[in-house]
Amino acid sequence: MISRRDFLKRSISVWFLSLIPVNFQGPVLRPPGARRDFLARCIRCGQCIEACPYDSLRALDVTSGGLAHTPYIDPLKTPCYLCQQRGPDGKDRPVSHWLRCGEVCPTGAIRKIRNDKEVLARVPYEMKIGTSVLDRRICLAWQYDSCGECYYNCPLRDKALRDYPPNEVIEGATGIRPYVDPEFCIGCGMCNYVCPVKEHIARSMMDRSIKLTWFEERYAAMVRNLIGSAGKGVRLPAIRVTMRI
Image (cartoon, rainbow, N blue to C red; front, side, top):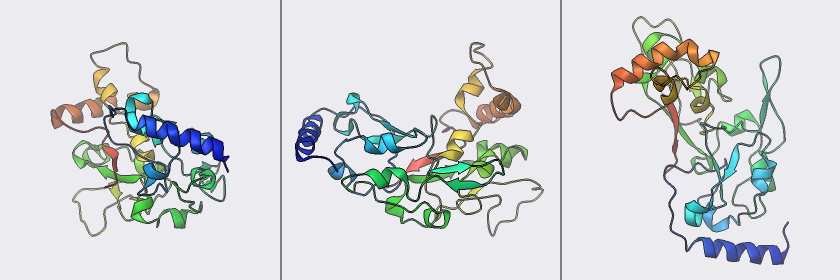
């Protein structure tokens, strides 16, 4: 709990920041459990950011105006690991009884969610970070019968991300065909993070200063072909988190 003096100081800071124009562009993905009235409750204390075991939470800077110093997740940099740790046996185990951000939030801006996969897969829509959306046109698994990184890395695999769409027959399909189930997807962004269909891979053909990892080189040629054939305006990666409405 914070002292009354600290609460007043932070409340004044929030009021002052609300007067600054908002220059932030793009979706703001909040921590899992963030309430609908998150901005009204959040006092910018930073405790959730400090408690995150994977540094998934970051603070928006002052150029974000009234949103400054509030926590957000950028899946392309660090997704939300849902406070899970993958062991040598390939199984995920919780690092805490509750998701850490909600456990330490002093105002209830972030609700406490029990760190159990069955619970996480069934959290109410208003407590989700967002929902992942897959573009089959530029998905390596759908177009080249390759990849499947999103499926294998999903912490809620076989619930949020399935290896094949239900009630759909696809001729000639022999491998994984990723399918996002919006009912169970919490929007952690892990699929977004591991998807190799990214812009810098396409640019690396012309810009030799861009160095690709072995993992990226493995898919580079296919990624360039897919992005090139998709044309302008395609949204990358092939699977990305959309903000809840």
